[in-house]
Image 1 (cartoon, rainbow, N blue to C red):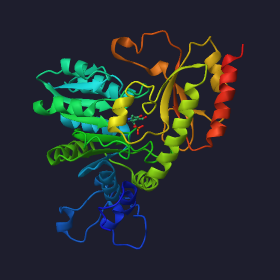
Image 2: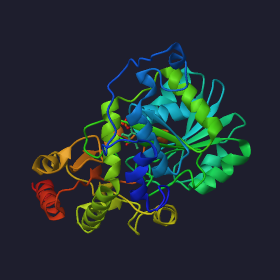
Image 3: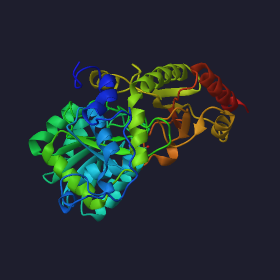
Image 4: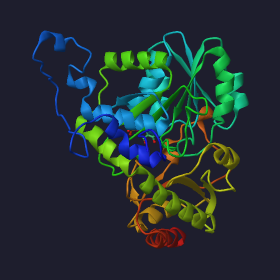
Length: 388
Ligand SMILES: Cc1ncc(COP(=O)(O)O)c(C=O)c1O
């Protein structure tokens, strides 16, 4: 079989063969700022001449991310937020207008509203559930649309092909944060996006022990601009973290399958609980946007939210205190289960999200523990929630 044939998980494992002629399975981690050459020609040659440009392990990771996302070009970054900022800043200049989803990851939204504003770019939110709302906000100076699908915390799915069809005739660039879809379950570039971005910190690294980000495109003109922007800002990824991301990629599909199966089982179980008002998980048929998810995605993972029925004061604190397996933590994609209350960080258009009377919004990440143990843990939490 040729190296560019086979299933995605096979290609993810064998990308190194295109690059290395060595006996080690994994690439070396060159901890280097300085690269020395024997002659002057090398110093000014085409090869990486300084560690900031990345060395062997970075080239390996770029190749593997290209396989994952169906991308010809990959640019690495130090974390997911930096990758989002790089992608956006590459597509807009002073005087331009950017539309971004109201369901974007909070720090990405903050970058758009504060940092871009300081750079002379107007950033405006749109309703993640309405392509018509997005269309009504297009201006002659709109140069880019930033999407995240599903949306952070609230899991709205974007109609990417429809949005790309709106954007293309006007030369508007479409950027997708594909951290949830991970490339294995969602291929934004094939569905019309110009750029796909991932926080590799999540499922790719998979063990909650490193930061990394990546920006992928098939547009060589965009790649030149991405490279220039990245170099001018000095964006770099530490070699040890690049190594951890690459190692995580090799087992990504197997881990993701386990997260997906456990996530679905817990989501269905939560949906049947009397304390739960609704579950926000696009793979559940009862959820809004399920049809779009089914059309465009090939799978899910362990990250979803629930809305509880209204609870008395102090009940939520008791729920969290009773949990022993679920940690209260702001990340996801690792092997451990996590939960966070979300209402404190929901900063949405018009200052609110969902004006119907509702209880607290909680986001869960289902890790790799035994599902029955996780259910017992949640059961204890719900008992504490309902105790007087
Ligand atoms: C959807 C999404 N995009 C981007 C990021 C940023 O990633 P990082 O923490 O690596 O900067 C996060 C982090 O939680 C995220 O959830």
